[in-house]
Image (cartoon, rainbow, N blue to C red):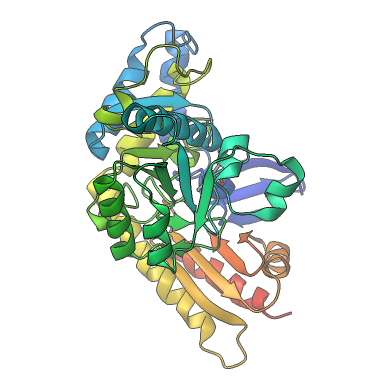
Amino acid sequence: MVFVSGKGCTLFDDEGREYLDFTSGIGVTVLGHDSPVVRAAVERVLDTGLIHASNLFRTRPAEALARELTRRSGLDFAFFCNSGAEGVEGSLKFARRWARSLGGDEKHRIVALRGGFHGRLFGSLAVTDRPDFRKPFEPLMPGVDFVDAGSPDEIDRALDPDRTAAMIVEPIQGEGGVRPLPLPLLQQIRKWTAERGIALILDEIQCGFGRTGTLFAHEPAGIRPDLLVLAKPLANGLPIGAVLVSREVGGVMRPGDHGTTFGGGPLVTTVALAVLETVGAPAFLEDVRKKGERLETLLSGLGDARSSIVREVRGRGLFRGVEVEGMASEVVDRARERGLLLVPAGKHVIRLLPALIVGEEELERAVSILGDALDP
Ligand SMILES: Cc1ncc(COP(=O)(O)O)c(C=O)c1O
């Protein structure tokens, strides 16, 4: 099918068929398609006539977005770029620069989790544990150690104060199968990294920005990372990435150490600020939490039948994964034929990433179609 238009949680193809969109363009269009918030923000920028000036100059929208993101995250600097992978690359560079200032050239290694996904460029792919994505492009960036989230001892051993610059973690692994990291483990990782002078990078590109019912996915752990990477939903579909950085880590960067031509332009940052103000409102987040609980209840019902192929339902808020026996892609295909768009996460997990403005009736309809699609 070829999509030609969208409205809310619905996409329309060129033959006039409607699809209930539970992919949101892989976790991007949090305010749905044809959002009035986005439309109004775009129109405001067009009225100024300024959609690009480069980082040679200051512009108000970039500064306003930086202020708001740093205020809400408790971090101090914001670097804007154009995608998630570019944000991860930036975070790795910032962390290494800082670590080298503490411990010299030896202190450069990056610890990452097995099953994690951080992007497809040479640095972000190097910290991504997916052999099928990596193999055709090796050698990647050296100096990465993978550890198992199920083995805290292994993580403890890998975090070497003399050799490790940073650890990168998704609070909820997305591509890896919608796997939340236990909060006590996230807290323990924060403790170890802080004690050993190791930067903690949280990749919230998929799980962050309201999807789990809090603005940032790490909030329930009550921790503050040194670097926080955001992208996908930040401007509801316009390309943007952001690396939020502590004063300590960001303070070692010098002009010219890093850069990007398009990052932080007035168009994307105006839209992102409008999306942030909408998604970050307490009543909006409360609504996401309620709908997330409803979705969880509905999905749990799918596993009740003895014959069900559902093995587990995981996730938080409106970020859910249904692990099935057999191939998730086959279920996704059958759901699409019935008018529901879903996306697999690995071989056995069906991912549900609806827009955060999804309605209760749409949640019920989606789970009902998914239930039918589980049957071969
Ligand atoms: C957790 C995570 N990090 C990084 C990325 C890479 O983002 P992008 O595709 O915008 O480069 C993704 C994309 O799926 C992601 O889910």
